[in-house]
Amino acid sequence: MQKKSLAALVATLFAVPFAAHADVTIYGFISSSIESTKATGATAGSASDYKSRTRVVDDNSRIGFKGFEDLGNGNKAIWQVEQSLKYFENGGTNDKGETATFATRNSFVGLDNASFGKVIVGYNDTAYKSMTNIGLNLFGDSTAENNGSSQVYSRAETRLKNSVHYFSPNWSGFQVGVSYGVDEARLNNVKADGTVTNTNGQTNTSRISLAGNYTNGGLQVAAGWDRQYDRGVSNASGAAANWAGKNVDFYKLATSYKFATGTFVGAGYEFGRFGSSTSGADLKQDDWTLSVGQDIGAATLKLEYSSLGRLKGATAGTEDNYKAHQWALGADYNLSKSTKLFGYYTKITNKSAQNANFANTSIYTSGVGGSSAALAAGVDPQAFGVGLKVAF
Image (cartoon, rainbow, N blue to C red):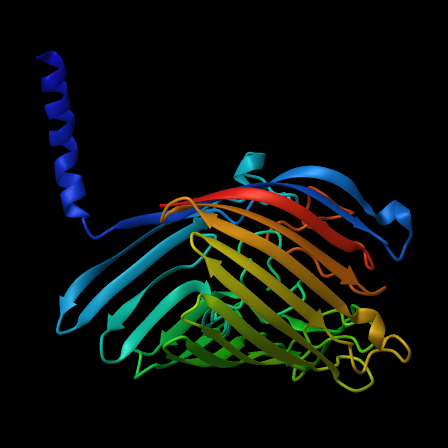
């Protein structure tokens, strides 16, 4: 009787709060792999290599809370707070010394209308990132992922701080989006060599992103443009600096098709133009990817190849030194709707001046434990791993 009374009391205490917040959804996943990893061939010599070792890694695990309030007439107030678990397998601190905190991933508040679309304000993936992926990233969230600013493909992807976003409704398969991030710092001009000047006043390193996609059955097509204002680069090294009037632009086209047989094929191309903050022409570099997948019952086999081209406009004789490419081969096996086993092998080959890294479980050859952690140029990261993912 005492146990039943206690259970009834606990149920009563929690009944009202849960009823009051019945529209709140808790979601996310926990994913981890054990892998063998190394990166050899550093331009500076073997002392800068990442020696072979076994790692346990967090495959971009996260937890989020989201909800809405129905305002009537097809209008809703929407919100979301999402956070990365930041290397939970290492006690919540990654190799750059970053720790798990609140709202580290897409977090926003906004309005959604069935006819007009939605507007959100906060910290969120750009339209360029969220609308041009269209399934090409077959190894998303694992070490083998190829997308991101320090990776081989889709280098304009970002999650935008201090930003406002609009996403349209789906119009017979068409959808468009736009993102704008403000610059709250407004720093003085700083060349890539460290020279500070007020010649052109303060920079305004805001960012705008436009994208659209079309879906028709198994076919998906997407295009995007992203501009980072006042972000010049050095013609000699490619290092970023704040320099008024020197912008960074990216353009992207992507397409994919999923056949009724479970076969997936996809391709993406991205072109980047970098305004130079030193003498010489603007820099240009492109990248592309090819993806193939095949469903076989509860299993999926997948293969990706991505390539980063030469840096046109770099110091004479060095353009090819900025190339890189990546192979990824893997398989998933679904144990249930929310749990899967997976395995992968991936290798990045960097030329002497390039240091493309793993997307979510980056490795570093210097400065480990701090914000200056970096991967040496010329090393070739590779990893073989198996993991388990549980979604909720």
